[in-house]
Image (cartoon, rainbow, N blue to C red; front, side, top):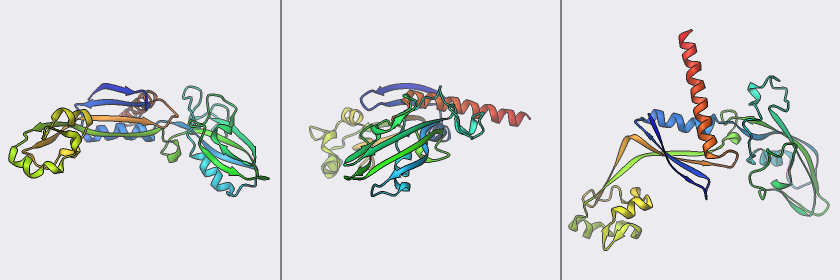
Length: 259
């Protein structure tokens, strides 16, 4: 199995890489590790001192839990691995608070954190609208956890596809019959352009129409990955942490088998 870095999309904060000499099991294991075994911070409990908004405490708490928080993996330990044994301490938890009075729209940036490294990723995320005379006040506790515990801890989305290759024949008779089935973006002077298909990544748009015009095949040993974080971590941190988790799981398995 070989990894080849392709590019990083700085504008969208995404990362692309290629996994070679692999199989579907290897590719999916890496994808699942990045999505479900990389820990992030998320709000776990909320204590309301007051809430006279139109939303029940439970609804507000649910919204708070789904707000992505920037995560410091070096400064915190997953709560189930902490020496406090789940009691909660400054090594595995952080407190956040909010107090607001209407009329206003309460936003994620209004949340105050005891640790400046742990804060909402998107400050303009709406929480609740307060009318005149309404107010809300709470203290929340965020913990470091994985998506195997709850989906709110997922650091982002990862997907992959097998490496496609395109053969263009542009058979005149087949083109005359099927040219209207191809999107205009891949056509050049009435023919399918291989360069345009590859540049625009429109393999699916030409696949299966007519093999005499364009035929797409896939390499079952090479996988193209795209890593899209939701802001808690960088794509690089997602990737490297997933590899660390994989190494640990393999070491634990080797130890168990050896025992």
